Amino acid sequence: MIKHSSWTPSASSNTLKKRSDTLHTIRSFFYNRNIYEVETPLLSQYSVTDPHIDSISSKLYQATYFLQTSPEFFMKRLLASNSDSIFQICKAFRHEQSSPTHSAEFTMLEWYHIGIDYHALMSEVEALITPLLSQSIDVKKYSYQSIFFTYCQLNPLNCSIQQLEQFVVNNISEVQQAENFSRDDWLDLIMALFIQKNMPDNQLIFIFDYPASQASLAQLSSINPLVAERFECFFNGIELANGFQELQNAEIQQERFKENQNTRQHNKQPAMDIDIHFLQALQHGLPFCSGVALGIDRLMMIILNKHNIEECMSFSDI
Image 1 (cartoon, one colour):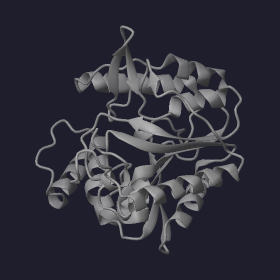
Image 2 (tube, rainbow, N blue to C red; image 1 turned 180 degrees about the vertical axis):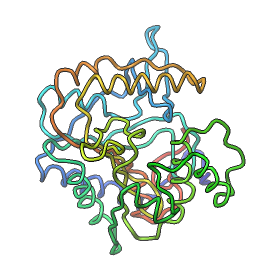
Image 3 (spheres, rainbow, N blue to C red; image 1 turned 90 degrees about the horizontal axis):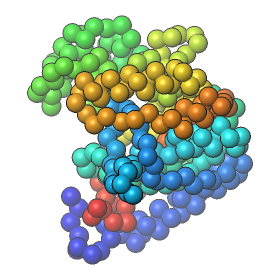
Image 4 (spheres, rainbow, N blue to C red; image 1 turned 180 degrees about the horizontal axis):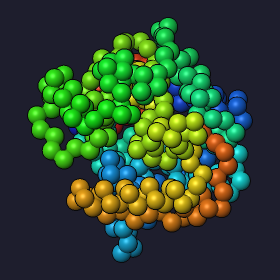
């Protein structure tokens, strides 16, 4: 926790000015590419079913509403209604423990570019981020399969749960107990506590083609059905962005949501209804597009060489 007087901002005036300049630069980046800015609701009767994301809820007019974990569903509804490529800078909310890189309320940049695939979107993310960083940086791109082999000598697409567990036992001392872990739980743990921790400094690293079981809202590859057309972007081991070649099939997406609900029930997590308006938008027709969400506060940490997200936010006493 950053110590400051009870009423004062958690970020310095210089930090807030730099944040303002960065937001101006980001908006100019999109305006110059004819990607226009939108606003969507922060409150909704629906939220995500993803078992790895917990939403913040509130009672309003005798109904339960959720603060949005991302503007994704609303933005895709705009895309399905024949909008052009769009971006949004907004607050997002997740019921998670605060940490040096996470706050329950944070600022998210999300955009959807019609007519390009996820590899082209990775290049667009690179074009946005690299000029914002003062130092010269290298950019590396690895498939999920290749980075696991490079760092762990494991093939994440076909190695056994026992092999993953043994790797953790041998290499990650922070893990004391991991009962009932799924295969993806082990993979996520190795990614977060080993691969990310060992990423070199001053490299912008893209990891793409995640396992099909981690597709979320991404399409599966037509070349290799074992992988999803999804990528994440990291700098100094910090996850900055998560992007998809967007799934357009409403029936497949509904089945994934149902699988999420089953997992939540098995984990004894709060039940989450499926957003029927989002599925109706997919049924109407989502254009071929790729989309990505990027954490502004984490980006500011990197730009300003800060070590706690609170130092990049105007106030952190939520």
